Image (cartoon, rainbow, N blue to C red; front, side):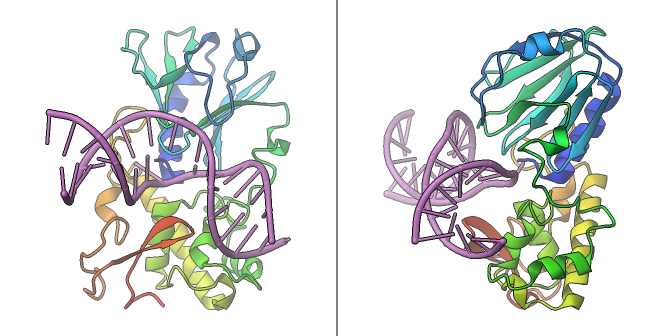
Length: 271
DNA sequence: CCGGCCACCTGCGGGC
DNA sequence: TGCCCGCAGGTGGCCG
């Protein structure tokens, strides 16, 4: 479900409720997520104060004095701040209860998500150490993309979805950004000019920034931490629109599997 | 190092 | 109504 804009929207929703609050209890109903939730989490977090929460790639990092907890939403995860009386869904796997009465609830039907302790040096942990730059940062630019693409024969769509190259570009926004930049998703990454990588970089930043502004994209059941759906779906140019006319040239949008993922594009506008 | 493929898991909608 | 199939927003790991 969530790509970077949805994770950023979640961060903005939960942060004000939890900063400076101390953990009263941890409830784990299902520890079999992508990796098992560690049994020591409860004793580790008890009475610890949330000093800050930030996002790195699609990971939410909860910083405590004793170290950092990471939560990843996988394909179907969501985080909500609820009251203690909220009914428990069968996929509500982990709660953090706070002394101010707030409760952070992690729900994840498919259980591809992650609740892991990263210790005192989170950026060197196996989950974060290999990650590429943030797409909205200044060190992600056309020069960087072009240099990393040299000699790569794989499809550019797979290239920009590779977290070692750049983080946070998932299946929706990869298709969207490539349409904006008029680049065919199956084109070899090493066969794109420096100039076109400038365009692609601008397109990636633009599409992510607009999606954040709209509160993310709601497909199926995604809602932000406050229970409000995102409204970016109405702005999607190609994703999920197979057969409908391209907004630029009216040719029908095509769907094709690239790297085992559905990809949407206009074969007129994108080369 | 790189590319291709698989796995993990549940739910939903469409077709018969 | 019910079953089966294909599809779904992520990403680490394995193999050649």
